[in-house]
Structures are given as structure tokens and as C-alpha cells.
Image (tube, rainbow, N blue to C red; front, side):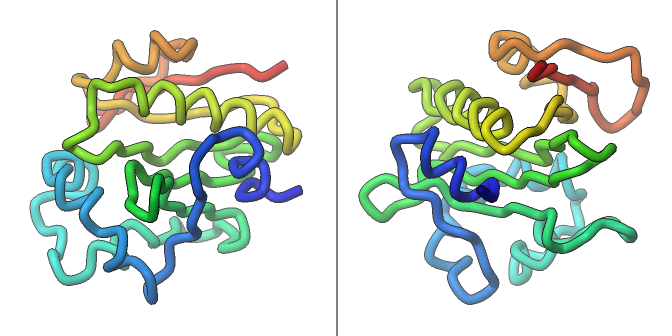
Length: 164
């Protein structure tokens, strides 16, 4: 079972693989989170190529390990996720981002989706989930059972959650 299939089993929403061809259909979830885009990708993010920016892979990563999806309810994106399998190590999952539509934040969608990701990761055999958080989301990740690491990075605060 791949990660998309596992997400479909663990979340009560439609999971749509984001591609360059369908990105505009789900772009609103990113447009309502401009602060996230700037903080995560820098001031120079090109409004015309948000997909190109979020779809980029770090050199050396296998494109088959990238899972970029819109999480939809009634055909509209309520959130989007970017997951990297076997990153930073084999058997680990890196949650690059979980972004909830700006109009829906604070209603529990993020926590529900985070738990669905944890369950999906467990179903697919991952042993650990890693992520980087900005200062304004650290409490959210702690509430989801993630622990802060001792890693120091000027751009984000590193978290993990063991699945074993």
C-alpha cells in the first residue's frame, strides 16, 4: 500500500494527488496561507509558480518518495500536505507541510489530518515522522504528540513522533 492509499483509509476526506495540471483547482488553500508560503519558501516565491516551488525535491531524493496532496471535502480543498518518504532516513517520513485553508483554521481539521497522517504512516511501515515547525505552530505539534528535538536550525524548530 502506498501512502496516498493509506491516507484515503485513515482520513474521512478525499485525497487528491496535486499535479501541475490540477493545482489551480486547489490553489485557494495556498492563497489563504500566504504567510506560510513566505515563511517557508521566502519572499521571492513566484505567485505564478507556487506549484513549481512546493513540488521541488532536494537533490538526491527519489521523486517516487514525494507525496503532495490536497485534502478535500465536497470537492474543495480544506488542506494540503507534502510528505517525503524515507527522509531523512530510510523508514522515516518527513512532513514538509500541513496547511489548512485559512477560513477553516481553528476548527480541528489540522489535528484530525495530523492524526490521519500518523495512522497512515504506521500502516505503511514508517517508524518515525519528522517535521520542521515555525514558532507559531510549535504548540500545535506538541498537542499532536510530537516531541521537539535538540537539533538547532535558524529556519525552524525540529520535531519528531516515534511510531514504534
